Structure formats: structure tokens, C-alpha cells
Image (cartoon, rainbow, N blue to C red):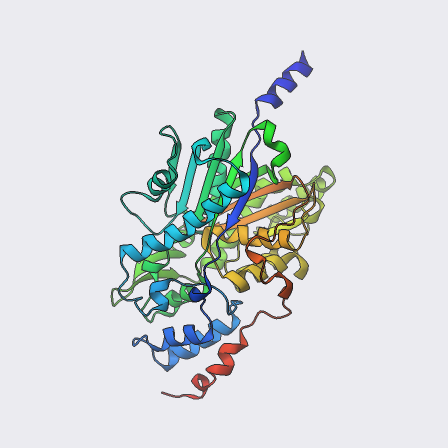
Length: 435
């Protein structure tokens, strides 16, 4: 009887598999190289020498390369007068481009999709983006539709969590998750330094995932969701206000990043791992973990992972490529080496911070480098405004080697140094100017 009960419980638990995913790569005419970025900065009449020096230093040290992609209206010099048409065209290219490839790769028809989740934070249109998807692909009238807005860079993992919960209620389902960001109408044109940083980091990108809980498709799956933990520290005022979209004194809209952001991130990651670590580590690590937890509580430190061997339960670390400082801090906090951080650093260099889609560019790098083997476990760490930390553990279901968006450049990576010295060489005169 007991064995039957356990069997029935396991049978009722629906697994969440990823069948395939597609990242977006923009055409070459959307690349933001040194000259394009320089022209963009110099035509901003609100900036002076002080701002030039700040931007030069930030661009050199940001870890962003010469081949990231920017919005067409910005490249064309129309960043001060964006319109809805620009925004929708940008989103259509990303969403439809990735979905077309995803359906073609998997052979799954749009009419077979049961759940559609779209996560694009900074655009609101009528009809909604999910409605545009349904109309283009003529999806069924009973498709379960969710439009997640304002969730920021951690939205993709939130969407996966939503799908996983739906899978526990509805059997034999196909789900689509689309993650991107709208940059065309959100380019900052003012002079506040803390609001100029997102212009340096954020770039055009997106990803579409096909998920299922169909047991019969387990052999086709590439990843299986083992654990997922979501943490929201928005009740803490400093964390809540650490990353917000505001207007500056001149009425220019943009993202305001405060000095409390690293502290908020550390707090959120700490609280999340406090729950996730016992789920993902083997038994031999749980006793040291309890000791670390005891001393953490006694000394009131904020890093539950300190002293733990996370690699005893995790093979690879897929960290949100939010910026060089974020990557460095996560590496120190988790005790990771440069090999562990390489996929995140290279994804940031090649594609920039693509918001909620960034994790999948990191995963794609691992796959293109043929790192991922059957049975490997991947820890995904995502951070987002609010402030949120949403982490999950995936199990690799087969050896993976799809080069995806890295096809034309994977041979050039990894780089020994991701500093963009081209900016320094071309615009060194900025540091010599006094007015």
C-alpha cells in the first residue's frame, strides 16, 4: 500500500521539460560599435566633458564588446523622438523571429500550444504582445495567456515558475515562454550619471522557449526543471528603490540605479539560497551547511553560501549577465573561478545585458562550447528590479552542442580580456580635455 501511494504521488507530479529554445540575433546593421556609440554620445547636447569622461571609463570597463545590438531609431539618431511604431517593430522582429525558428526546429505547430507567457517589461500596447502572437500564428481560442510586465531581468525564471505550476494542474501541455525587452522608447537622453549606465549595458535581445510536461516527449527534452525558488525583498525600502524608472529634473525618462543596488542584490541572493541550497546539495554537504547557517545567524553575516562547496551539487553556473560588477560580485560570493564565470562574461561581451533573455545567451554559450553533458546540473541565477532574486536548477537530459546564436563567433571565445580598449584609443582626447 505504501509503495502504491509513493508511485501514485510521483505519477501525479508533472515534470517540466524544455524541448528547445531560440535566442535572437539582430542583423549587422544594428551593431553598436565604437564609432556608432561615440556618435551617439557626442550628439547628446546635455553632456559636457565631465559626463564624457564618466562614460568613457564606464564603456571601457563595462565588459561590453563591439558587436552588441541597439535599437534602430537610436542608431538612426531618433532616440529623442521614439514612437510606438518603432517599439512594436523591434518587438515583432524579436518575438516572431525566435518563434518562427522554434516552431521550425521542433516541428510543433502553433495550434498545439496550450500556454503562452510573454515577459516584456517596458511596453504596453493594445492589442497586447501576446495577442499579436496569437493572431500571427492563429493559436487556439482556449490557449491560456499571460502577459508579465514590469518584472525586469528575472522575468524569464518567473515565467518558467508560472508554467511549472500550471503543469501540475493541466497534463499533456505545450507552453511557450517569450522573454525580451523594449529599448526603442526607453533610451535615456539626459545627463544623470546613474541613469546613463543602462544605456551602456542594455542591448537588443530575446529568447523563446518551448516547454512541456508530456511524459512521451521526455526523450526529446534538453533540460528538466529540478528546483525553483523565488525571493522578493520589496518590503525593504532600500531594495525596493534600488532600481527604478523615473524622470530626471529635465523630464527625461530612464532607469535610476542607486548605490544600494549591490546590497539589495546580495540580500536577495542570500535569502534565496538559504532556501535553495538544501534542495540542491547532496547529503554530505548538508551538515556543513547547518554549521554555516548557525554561525551566520550568530555573526549576522548575509552570505549563507560561504564555506559551502556548491559544486558538490551543481556542475555549471548560469548567472544573469547584468554587468561586470554584478558578475564579479557573484563570483566572489559563490566561490566561483574564471572557468565558471566565463559563459556569463562572454555573453555580456558579445550580446550585452539583454534583460530577461540574458540567461539563455549564457546557456547557449555553454552548449556551443559543448560543455553540457547528460546528467549535468545547472544553477540559473536571475536578479530583477523590485527587488527580486529567482533561481532554478536544471538537469541536462542529453549531450548538448547546438551553437544557436554563437555560430559565427564561438571560435573567437573565450577572450582573455573583455575591456573595450577601442573606446580608449579613439576617444583618449576626452581625458585630456578640461572644458
